[in-house]
Length: 103
Image: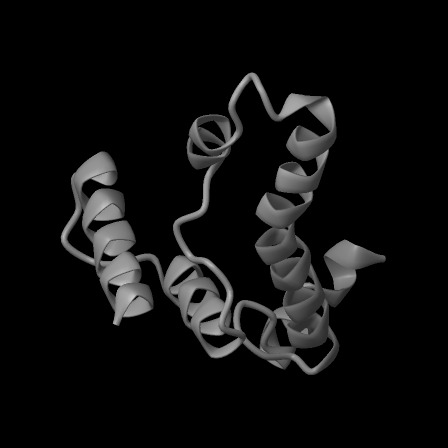
């Protein structure tokens, strides 16, 4: 349930920040992929700074940064898979329509 609330919160914040009614399809797809992979959706560097205290030292800071980077690394992997399979923002029509520009 927490992940669903995180998605709803991120969608609300996104709409408020951009002053729009619709959700960005790419963001929505990323949130759902993180949900399916059981990874944190709303983990930010702000959360990182509050989770690491002065007593824990730099070693724990590096470990905590790796935890924050896990969702980003997973999204990078999933984006590559989408590109290779022409899914998401990478439909085959996009590549074929812009082939002249690519060359």
